[in-house]
Length: 51
Image 1 (cartoon, rainbow, N blue to C red):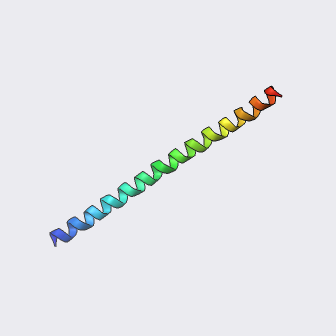
Image 2: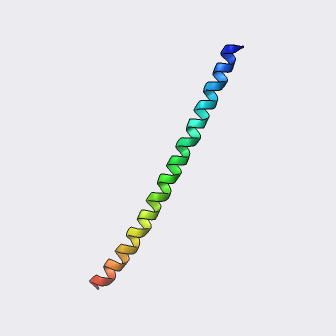
Image 3: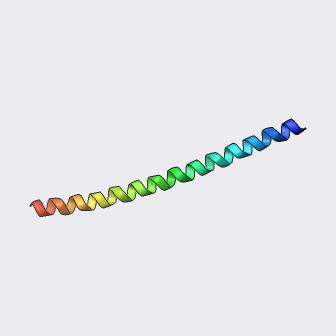
């Protein structure tokens, strides 16, 4: 019985870790998208100045 509980506990920990990593990845993606949008705006303005 005890061994079975240990396995379930390990699975639960692993699942919690995976969820945490996914949240971190999503946050990183959001930051990257925001940076790209800012760069895109800056690039547009830069092109306008060149013309």
